Amino acid sequence: MESLQARIKSTRITRGLSQAELAKRAGVSQPTVANWENGSHIPRQGVLEKIGEALGVTPVWLLSGSLGEDERSAEFYLQHPVRHLPVYSWPASGSISGSTPPAGYIPYATRKENLFGLMNLADDEWSYDIFIGDPDTARLRTGEYLAIEDNQIRITDREETERLAPKAVLGRIVAKMTFYR
Image (cartoon, rainbow, N blue to C red; front, side, top):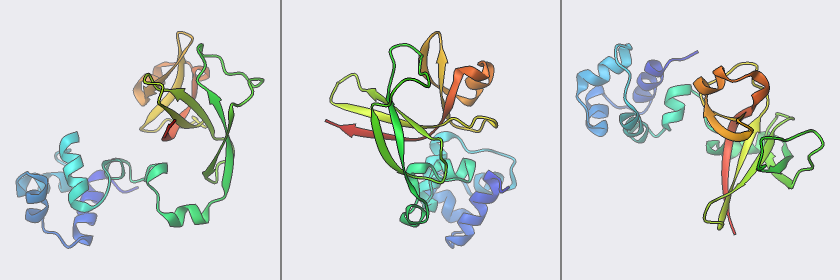
């Protein structure tokens, strides 16, 4: 699996940039870029965004090597079936049981068969978010998770999720969509 340092270097070379050119675009020195590429330093979050802009990639891709579900090309959608995922209303308590009927369904291009959505009305009541979750949490990855804690559904990161009981984790968030009324 390719590392952060390898992704920075290979993408820089593919884009035809020297270390000095990438450094100038990212607002750092050339030795700093050399340190990223040899793995002796890891760029900070703010600089990761500048590196992503300079290389035409996202910070998520630089860190993980994978595109977020909502950042994939049209080719991805043409090669994957559209499934109608059940979308549940964000419950007042953390209880979503197998007998809870979905509020509706949303079309989504994916090969996975067990994804689900949780819909949360925003505080302004003019928009709502749908979080697409993958209940397969056998291997925790970098990212955000939907979890039940203190009888409330919360968004947690991987480290928080690791301390929770496995039954408390509903799934990893693979996409977030915002809709307006």
